[in-house]
Length: 261
Image (cartoon, rainbow, N blue to C red; front, side, top):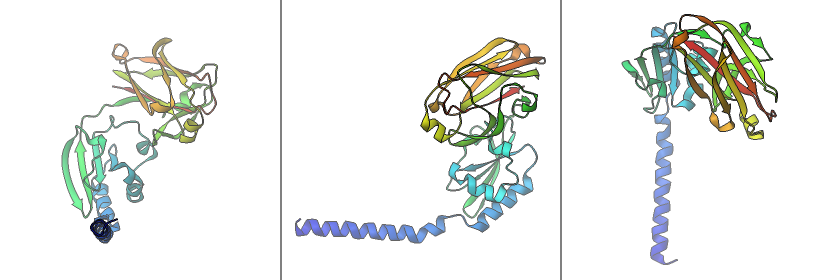
């Protein structure tokens, strides 16, 4: 290495050291403090009403946010499949990030508490006529568990089943239907997805007439299916879910459904 090259190299190293030192010295000033979070939480609490939803941005700050607002973030809220049923969204964020739930919603007001931003959004809500997970006690069929699952690396509240090679049917009777039946399905647990890759066959029928036939695989995440039930709106029907897994090892199927107005 020539003297000129050595000098350039030394200068670059010195510059990098200065940059890293500067980042280290200013990093603390960029982090939201406990006081910031407490003030933000106080604002949310003052305006929060039953039926609101709270979301945090970026997604990885969710655990920090729930340390201050966890009593308002119910299991059902944390494990929700989407935000269609909510008319008001409280977004608690840092670093100028926004939650995808606020896309298309109208900003009502916002404020800054140090490094934490609180914003209230409003949007049109779609009423839920029947939540299949909440009515799991009415289910007729095979073994199941209602729980919060890990699907697509996020908590999802729903019904967990372990399908075998032979089809198993889960049946709800006297379900009030509206304009749509929204179905979510996916494979629970990172380690299960890592250990096997078999598909799960899923069928949904209304009064015996098949409305959905799909296959769920590891990479599908938490898939949404919208079934048009406008012709049946205002009446009650039997809804069945039939599942099977040709290769059942490590196949933990999670699903959730809602009849919506």
